Length: 253
Image 1 (cartoon, rainbow, N blue to C red):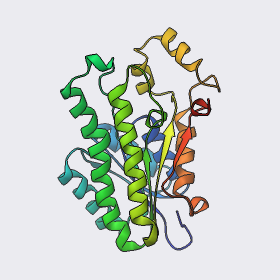
Image 2: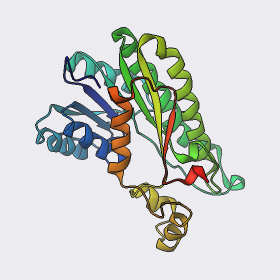
Image 3: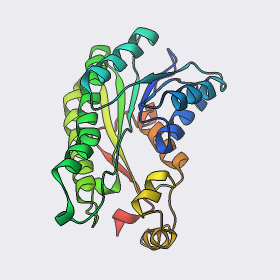
Image 4: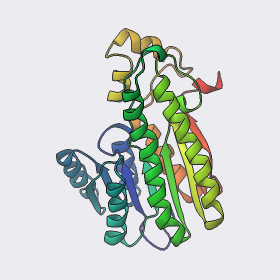
């Protein structure tokens, strides 16, 4: 984010809960204009109101990242409203239906990949369309430590996040010479509703999972948000094509 010449314009998908919501608030505290997107209008409008109360321009725009017309329209509306797009955070995602490989279905694969992979691809396509013309921009894809290691019982989710890592690297190579940076953040367990679903809403399961994390705790959404703000900032202007694991040391083991 270069704030020297203009107020940065930030677009966040999957912005209404968890990491996405924390990221919207973090960018607002930095003084950016923030566009939040999702599929729940009441929650989206409430978040936009909360962001404006911090003294920044903020809007909610409804979009389903699985539909290219929605994604194209979302990006075009941001540019129409603010004149440019400086930062995009692609956070929309789902864990899908968990279970052993032998229990997986084509329907779960399609549902998970359509959000996590197709959604990221479509977002990159249209965000890069704008940023390449600008000759500047930063994109942060939200991956997972599951994009770097295997996780038993989560094969389809793991595969989808590995795909996000590959998209990140390829897009970064395509945009680097034009001044566009593309990186990923790969969180470990984060204290969100997704973590609760991941462990079956079972506190004993959660405690057992967190015991495998060297830091012995889940991250707070704000900790991931601050990493995303850093990746999008001029402090990381020579950093592209990378995935930064924010996982309490899990992938260092």
